[in-house]
Image 1 (cartoon, one colour):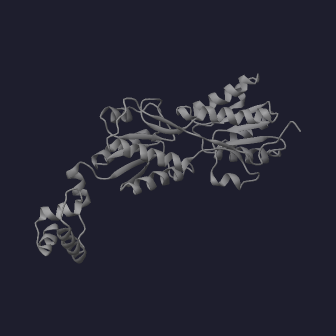
Image 2 (image 1 turned 135 degrees about the vertical axis):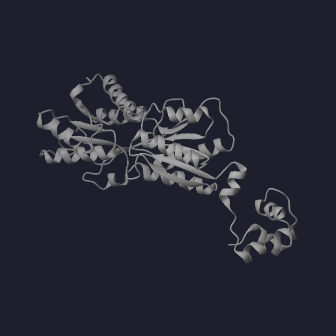
Image 3 (image 1 turned 90 degrees about the vertical axis):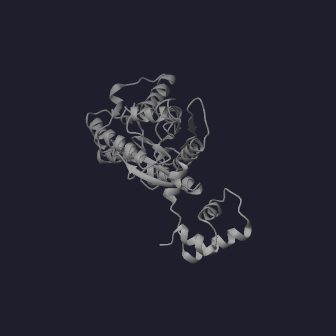
Length: 334
């Protein structure tokens, strides 16, 4: 394998001149640069990017830590991160935590030891001291899809407002007994979606009934059994608001398995707008999250921090959502 000394010898210049010509940061006359580049091509010389990065204090590598790439929310987020990273000369290292805090902390330590320039997280828990510590150390870090309040930069949707809009749509179409399927309330995003649901009901003068709040945290059936159990007890809502599309799909299956129809008997609204949502029966009305753009914006923000953009306060970037109307909601006013 050719070395920088081989390139210098073939071009008839010093190794420092080769370095200057390749870096592009220091002026080198045109004739000398052409000699160096001809030697690089002839010898198929590959610069040691890692050594160069360590010398400059950078590796042009970003760590992306997410719960599970198989979770249908995160592939689009990851692609957004990767595309922006690549456009800016960065490589992305992907780590899956399976919502395990110990694994998340372990990945943080390993990635720091491997000299990544910054980290993008969808953290397993709201109170994550290891992330706060990174921030205190001025280590570039941005959260995506989940946030920790105002303490760390984050790119998320307005979960509260989006949930209010979704539940208001159900109320406006004549629904009064509205159930919610909510995920792990250790995560702010699910608490915000639950609070939006409660606010919409209370604002319309409708009661918030505890048995209509189905907590499915720690369960992997996406709300199927919770909805089925509710219906078997004879509690039949006229609508279900699910805090994710997989939970909405689980709810639709449970309703059908109990001999009822969607939307004739029970309307269902989801939250995500995953690709599958338009293909299920019936096509799902859902809150559309700009997942790709969230990842892209998180990468832009992180690269900005790496490049020295300073802010006294962390930025919480709220991305807009859109309620996509399909066929899973009945207009009860008709």
